[in-house]
Image (tube, rainbow, N blue to C red; front, side):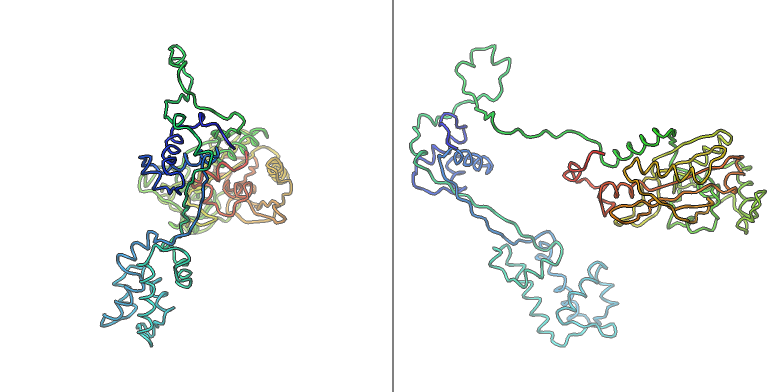
Length: 496
């Protein structure tokens, strides 16, 4: 696209004026920066791009790939490669054993380092390091060290075998593609009169102050191509998890439920004892539950702990035989972070034991889980209960199917399961991409749960993980994606 010289911006005028002084010269970026007295490469490249679009210069671009040291590679160059340091230790130690190596090197170095040495001829026999051909081991390490010390180098110049080796080791090297540009005047660029290349103040914005003075009459205005497509402005939007929470809330509210919000900090009594979870249950151990130092204990009414104790030890007056053993009121009063939101719904029922209700909650729960693609120590649970005269299993299944149909998953099935505080108990599955996926549990509260609290009507209950539902809705295979600051991924998520 050719343009008139009068429409050139000041950086383009300066660059073209300097280039006219050496008409046939091929200008590098450094040449342009020096001649135009610029320090910012972006200004020079932008000016060259504008002149090239106008037909005043031609631009030649060449790209090359350079292999250079990454962060770990810089450390290796300064302190030595891991295998070099370990091999030096083996050669100079009186007792080069695995036990001594582990005491002299950090654990994150000893294990990977031994693996590297084994691949170049070092053996570990009866706990002691040996090498049948030590000179060959030394040669391998010297080659790798020389490779590291020679960087940066062009991709084509480096040894291909060593390049593949170091690519497999995280953080040692990286490939960087660099683009080199040069500019040459065209006949049109040579023909532009010097008077047209005088730099002048350009007006970018028409302001009230400018129009109120006479300066606008003599001013030069920056031209804009109104035929070009404008960029789409970035607008704020809800995080996919928050949007999903609002969607779940709206569905339950539409179905006639009321929302329940309560505290994260609870007692072991309400969190577990009230739900007929035995005090020696694995879920009570430290690997599953976050117990608190402050508050370490939260006082509970004696009539509650006595009622739970009777239920747990011999079934109370429910007809159950309980769990046997002895019940500890002290254990019941331990402070913890709730492991499920059922702890809050059971307290709501205890405060309103005779009033029919339909309530739900979408809130955080905490469990001491190792973080991986399907587990987090802090996550959200969707919880719901129905308590009314005549509530039954068919009502529970219908409610769950209605909820998932509104979420866009019409194929739902349930199958028998076991939970300590419901009988019968169900697991809920939905069909997704031709497979059945388990999304939560449900059931009817046992008499051991309801009768100590004075609840006479049946209580239908269910719980499901929100993050697992989010993975289903958003098509994810790693739960951690929901909580990283990946703006590009967030911008591309559908509106829920």
